[in-house]
Image (tube, rainbow, N blue to C red):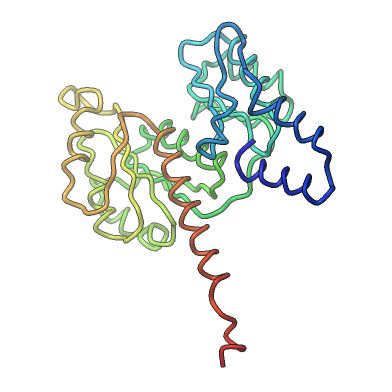
Length: 269
């Protein structure tokens, strides 16, 4: 339950559509609940503080722990899905069996249960090569669960510069770009020189020995001469997606506020 949903609940109480006791029950069973599962303490208050609920990071967790965490997050009131990333194959299978209708992407190693928020704005995830796709798919999956229309453009790395130039119109039409690249990590710099939208660069641990598991790409992106490039950690498609979703939602909300504040054209004349 996030701020907008709590505000809606309070307005329903004010309008007489819900009782104070019903509102209290919703809060006690949601953001005010402790969320202590013994092996983990869920942050059920996070959506109220930040606008986004906690996400299960599956790396190192057992399959039963992943399922229990998703069940508890899914039980929380509100209109956001319960999301888990970096899941093992067995955890992905268990989520599919436990939650009929769960959205599962084995390549992204992600799963989501429950209602996905309506899309506001477009995040375009761009890969330099096919090997970067698992990180890119994680970014696209998370961006969609965080309330964006997420699309994927594959294999437009700088070794064939014509490939990225051929999709320039798609790059320019997006509200935010996530550019995923390993090896030399040069693609975000090229993209930032083609468009005027925010560019979030994600280095991947792809490449031969001197790539140092993504460190070379990370340093290239940090030293980019392209203006407006911001950089996430190596293989961190999740972090890039959250940042992109927040940027995009903020831009779309700001545009809506400006449009509603403008005087009607006819009455102005």
